[in-house]
Amino acid sequence: MSLMNNDPPVLGDVIAVLERTPATLAALLDGLPEVWATATEGAGTWSPLDVVGHLIHGERSDWIPRARHILAGDPRPLAAFDREAQFKESSGQTMSARLATFERQRRENLATLKAFGLTSEDLSRRGLHPELGEVTLGQLLATWVVHDLDHVGQVARTMAKVYGTTVGPWSAYLSILSDRPRP
Amino acid sequence: MSLMNNDPPVLGDVIAVLERTPATLAALLDGLPEVWATATEGAGTWSPLDVVGHLIHGERSDWIPRARHILAGDPRPLAAFDREAQFKESSGQTMSARLATFERQRRENLATLKAFGLTSEDLSRRGLHPELGEVTLGQLLATWVVHDLDHVGQVARTMAKVYGTTVGPWSAYLSILSDRPRP
Image (cartoon, each protein chain N blue to C red):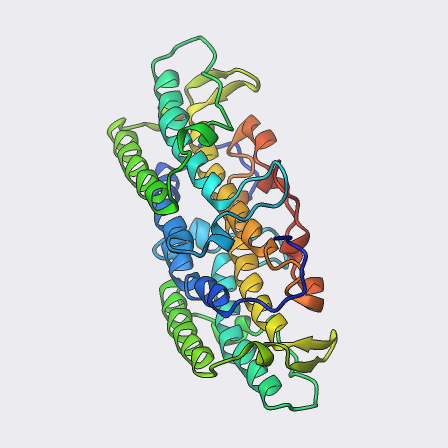
């Protein structure tokens, strides 16, 4: 099997990752001292607290609404996604509250996804992305997975950088410390 | 508070991350389909399964033995760490078995760390790294934390790349897909 392929994803593989993300983030973040939870990589970058708010917004506004749009055969472009919505919507909510909301929404959305009873033909159905042009439902579901993993990686990277200088000379071996910030 | 500082880490902040890593990796990886668990970023890079084996080797051979060495005031260089040991030591062990071993070893090592009853003076105690020269116990403990987070990030990145092309045009938005492999 090559890593390069244009086949749609296997639905069971998609769900296996999506259903693990809330527990992964809860294990990593719930009850953590503030020094970790509110750290950023600098001005304009997100803390772990911000990231969980962003994931909540995605559950509300992005993945399932877009899947419905494509399944309905709606020829209009998919609604644009607000990448900064968490700064209003989740403002003032604690990490524990955000993690619980994310867990519940993800569980409900996966129940909805399973209830679609998608066939492999459905995964090839097409929609119009407002910026990227033609996309498929399979690509949307694969993107949901990679988006989760991207933000898990971002949380780990952001936390690591709290100790960017505290590690002393070991920074030479810890490549995560020199990885990009995320705008 | 600046991110740049040379103060030793706060022991409670160190333990808060270290005690969460086994559950984080178990939530992310236990029971995952093979397509995720054994994926790599290409020749010479590690799968999530390899990473957990590497973390087990670190629990056995790196962090606590090095802390004892420094606390004993041993003037000899710290023992070198074998970054490839997992390919022999954990060979043939399932993901679930590795996760359980890692959880148990980490729990025991944190009990040992707490039993040291470290003072902030202890955190400034010095040892000799075989390649990096003079290091402190505080830097060693901060490195243990960042090393965990580096590998959590690596697992997320490696899994994401399984869908490197499956996401179609969305790859333009998913920066994790173009992040470095880890040699």
